[in-house]
Amino acid sequence: MDIVKEVLEKQQQNLQKYKPITVEKPLEPTIDVGHMMVSDPNYFDDEQMKADREAYVLNLTRDNVQLLINSIWQLPTERVDESIVAKLPPPKAVLPRARKLPVPKPLTKWEEFAKKKGIKKRPREKKVFDPVLDKWVPTYGYQRYKAEKEKDWVLEVPQNDPYRDMFKEKRDLRIERVAKNEVSRMKNIARAKKIATPRTGFLGPESASAKQLITASNIAKASTASVGVFQESLPNDKQARGIGVKELMPGERRKKKVSSLTGEKRRNMEIVTKVLNKKPKIDIDRAISLQKAEARAEREAEEDDEDGSRKKKKSGKKVKGFSRKKPKGGQGKRNPNKRAVGRKRR
Image 1 (cartoon, rainbow, N blue to C red):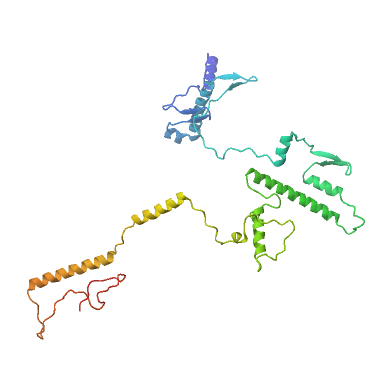
Image 2 (spheres, helix red, strand yellow; image 1 turned 90 degrees about the horizontal axis):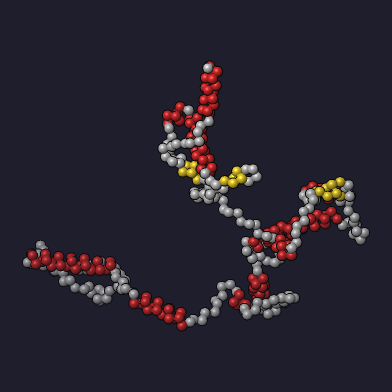
């Protein structure tokens, strides 16, 4: 009996290591099978978190993963090459991309020509046998350049020019070939981005079009004392058609545009609208000064009525009252632009 009891206890301990596949939670987690993502809205248990944080997080993660696996096993499955495969549904949550969608690389000029003519690219071997060096050398790369330099350690000089530097000419041809390939690469990029480029020469912001060059040439020829009359012309020189030198000069007045009936009517209506909607200007400072003068005159008149008579001075002369007449210095003519501050006493 002790042996049976020991076996049962051992089996019970083994069963405790493997938890059941059923998981119960107060709030149902949100499961997005398309992204294989689980969002658990339940709160953390602070007591268990403080007691053993690592074990609590491990058990919580295990339960959420078990829910996700249960959802995946509910999907329709099929067997492919002795494996059970489940097709995931479209995702529910919309996740933003860190970068934009990749754009297919545009074809170069040669690739377009090869595709049109049906030319297929042949795979080249990485190494070829060189009978001069008697060894295998790379087909391309910097090791290929080293092999060429080792093979061409001596070059034949022409008899008619014994001082000719053949190594320099070979190096210049290589530099020119590299520059030509770089220009072709830049032209392919500009053509893919739909940027207008000249057919010859280097690319850059200083490059001008053919029309601009002809215009600049005509202006330079006419910038002489004789306005280009005695200026010699170059062979195969082109002139700007239908454009005079004065029109090409910067800052010159251009020809007046021909006005149409609709445009003339619209301009006349704008003028009439401005005239009819025009309001008279009001001089606020002048109006305030006149109002103050009238108020002061009325106040003085009321004071005179209350006294009944004029006060006399000690000398016996009567004080003349204010007649409130216009000043005679300016003969009644005032400057409307000058600010008036009441009437002056005399």
